[in-house]
Length: 301
Image (cartoon, rainbow, N blue to C red; front, side):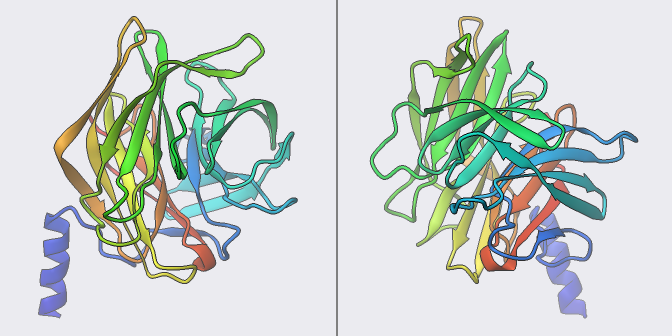
């Protein structure tokens, strides 16, 4: 017992969350088709005590669910499937609300197709879709974030990378929209990123991205040994991003990124900072084990 107490205290001191701690994670799916590949904040519940979020699933076969609505409160999480109206995507990996356009979102597939969605009730209608710019050879995308600053928008996304021989590539570009709704990307910049934790073979250096209100870039990183695990992951403060009045995007990665928390046994693929809050909503895609969700106080200034 003394050893267990000491170990737990050390993990807490290091900002590490012991796996399996009671009430930390809420299960939201029990199989490989129910994991959380991406999260987008949708709004607060009527009583203000919880949040609604859109969830994308990385399913690939026709007719399988692509999108759900998550309602999350302390100690409870419910997921309801939604209708996808339009061209059906393969392997959705990320979703993000469009700042200043209520009810509209961008969702990204692993191969780099961006879908603009308009959500009403339990239906998401495809407005348009387009490929990402500057896709590199072998790129595999799991992350997407939108940043607003000085009246301008920018997008961040990343090739997830693969182990010590392939760092993640973090892309950034200004973002506007055509009159008919198509996303239009400006000049693209690139940064190389290597995960602090986890490390070694099989590491996905960036499995999702979120940006705080002040411009801090948070990323999740994960390892996946197969459909039954074992898994491991972490959330790290990787740097900062700003958008100038001219629309120029500046990304500065930290020389020594700060690991905010590690999560053995879980594969985090979704990180979403809740607007006006210190809380980050975390989601996992643990393959045959299903999906889990929890919040952590990572998004303060």
